[in-house]
Amino acid sequence: MLLIAGGGTFLVLMKDLTGLAWVDWIADQLTHPAWHGFTFYDFIFPLFLFLAGVSLPFSLNRGLEMGLSKSDLYRKAFWRMVILIALGILDKNAPFPFFEPSQIRLGSVLGRIGLAGFVTTLLYLNFSGRKRLSLVGIILVLYYAALFLIPVPGYGAGNLTMEGNLVGWIDRTFLPGRLLQKIYDELGLLTQFPAICLTILGAMAGDILRTNWKDNRKIQTLLLAGVTGIALGLLWDLHFPINKHLWSSSFICLTAGMAFIFLAGFYFVIDVLQFRKWAFFFMVIGMNSITVYLAYRFINFSHTSKLLFGGLYAPAPEPWQEVFQAFGAMMLVWLFLYFLYRQKIFLKV
Image (cartoon, rainbow, N blue to C red; front, side, top):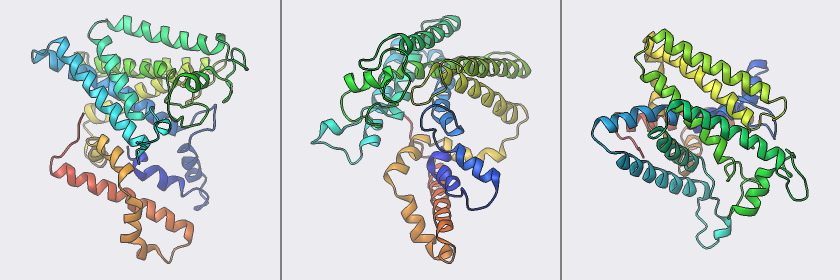
């Protein structure tokens, strides 16, 4: 959330300004590849989906312990999905084109999180972990097979180019409204299926954290799952390239593996070693993640930063002025969220 709320912009703007190779490398990691390939920025959204799954075993089991029925939990997850889809459509279309429905983009980050959470809730409450893991494997293999075996009119089968892939053809043919990339939408129809797998796998990670196992066993299990996912993703990449635009099966395996390893690392540092004070800066952001996601869309923090701090960095060279302005915007976002934190105001869906 920090990177999305201005931190990424601040770092990207520093590229080629410092003469430091490591700064330029970080800046390059905060932009998406044009098509095939992978950078750290590609990991952010999959991590959202994974963490949405991690939280589900805690919330669902707590609900069951409180006496809620499965129907109650289904209903709650359904309305959460509806609200997130609505917020996502609002976010991706502001100012909303009320009189031009063909310009409404239906795909959204929030909508995908809502849908994945709802599907994972249904699966979690009705199927064992082994069956859910099997379903993930089936989805990823069928998705792989579909993209290589189903012919696209004018391009044939197995075409993974930006113009000729099955994902784009389905979006152009069946998804109404505006497509972000014109010829496809990376948050479109077919990519929903592999994306949901990340939330299903996240729920399995949540189950690992909920066990009565010793901390070492939990961490080892998470790390093993992570290494397995990364290895499988890199192996699959040899034939089905890692590609965030396509949400390729190799991309899902890689990012799921990374998410398991990141979760193990933070669990070790925060829960086992009890090193927590350093995380307060990030906790303020994370506890109001939906707020900051929407606020950064509707509030021009960059303009406010320029008005408040422009006089301080005016003597600096123009490229550096953009860096300072972005840094000021990022800090304004954090102060806004800190105010909400102190007032115990948290937007939850």
